[in-house]
Length: 87
Image 1 (cartoon, rainbow, N blue to C red):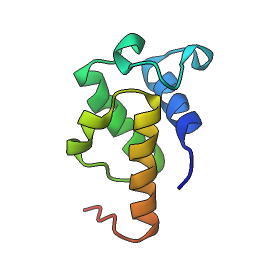
Image 2: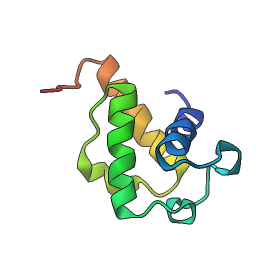
Image 3: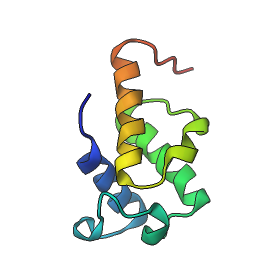
Image 4: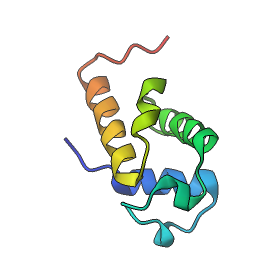
């Protein structure tokens, strides 16, 4: 299982126009100005950037950069295993 926090920081900084140097891995997304609609936007950006599918049920886990990275890792591992069924 890889550590994708740096990749999540990159997507967050590009999507929400934030300085990556100011994004801490354990800072709550709300402190970065990412609300519930922003989490949906982040989920979509991650899906596009990494060509994976992330179930909307995972949004509850989007609390900070570290937790988003865990969800991304699981999605990428699922894709590598062939269990990602994009339609």
